[in-house]
Length: 253
Ligand code: UDP
Image 1 (cartoon, rainbow, N blue to C red):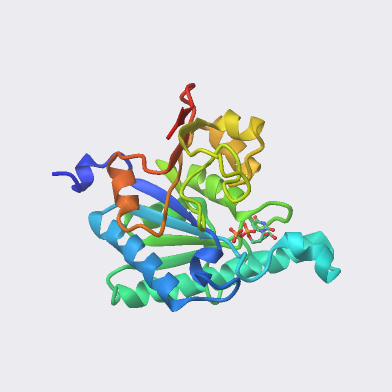
Image 2: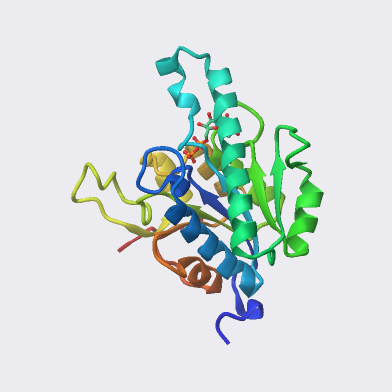
C-alpha cells in the first residue's frame, strides 16, 4: 500500500523551514494560520511513521546580515539571529505538542546551551530520539556565526543520517534558472545538479549548504510547502518541485 512506511523511499528526513514559514504573510513575528499549517503537515508525516527532525531559521526575528543597518558587529548580530531560531523552535515545540494533544513527543536541542528550556545538542542522543519516534528540533543554528540555518540543516541532516533534506522556502516552489520575480522567462528545474546551482550562482539555498550536500550526496528537495501532502509524496517517491542531486543531466519543467 502506498503510504505504508515500509514502502517509503525516505524513512528519516530533515525539514528546513525558513523563519518566514512561521510568520506567514507578515514580514515578522508569528501567524497562527502558518503555525497550524506546519503542525498539520509535520504531524501527518509523523503519523505515517516517518522520522522527522526540523531546523527553523530566524528571518522573521533577525538575521546577521542586518548587522550594518543596526551598527552591530556581524558576529554579535549572528548571535541575535541564532537566539531567534531558539524562539522559533520553542514556538514550534509548543504548537506541535499542543496540536498532537500530547501524542507526539517533541524535543528541542540547542547548539548554544540553554539547559533549563531545552536539551543540549548531542548527535547520538538526537539519533536515539528519532529512532524512538520523537520529533527533534535543532535550534541555535550551528552555534557559530557567519553561517545560516540552510547550512545547519545540511549539517544536522548528515549528522543524523537522514535520507533527505526537504526545504520549505517561502513562496518558492522549486529552483528556477533565474529569479522568477525578476526574470519572467525563468524556468523551473525538475532536477538539477548541485554544481549547476553553484555555477549559476542561484541564491534560493545558501551555497555552503549546497556544497556540503554535494560532497555527501544528500538529496535536497525544494517544493511548494503551501500545498498539502507534498512531503508525504516526496517520502513516497515523487519529486514535485525541484530535486537537487548528483545525476548529471539537469531537467527543466
Ligand atoms: N545563524 C548563525 N549561525 C548559524 C545559523 C544561523 O549565526 O549556524 C544566524 C545568522 O545570523 C542567520 C540567523 O541566525 O541570519 C537566522 O537564520 P537564517 O538567516 O538562516 O534564517 P531564515 O532565512 O531561514 O529565516
